[in-house]
Image (cartoon, rainbow, N blue to C red):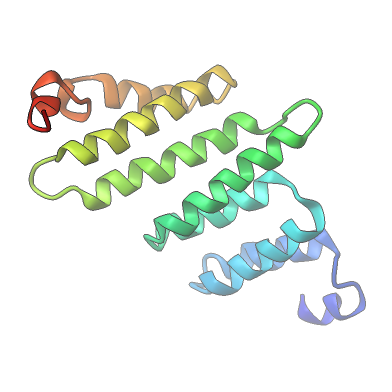
Length: 157
């Protein structure tokens, strides 16, 4: 791929294949760099989503959230907002996994706040026709474990 890119360093097809090959080979930093390069050329939301997913796997939630927000903005700039549901879903996924990573034996008030923000984004993603979001909505709404209650808020009064 690198040799072919020597002749055409903005060839999206070759860059996509290179990034896809780097991801499973545990060359995550190189894959992020390649996706970033593609995103610079195309401004296509799906590459920002790909970067965000890799960063979530690496537990780098701050940068993953930044890229997820970038994906949402990129999708919103499309005339028909194609992919906005997928981008919003990824933003919610970052928050969901952030909540999971911070949670120890019991769930804290602030963990619940993170889950509630994720739940809001999952609902929005579902409205935007990302039907995978409904699974997470169901998971988060199934009991009050993930949702704040009056008792939770009373401790701060």
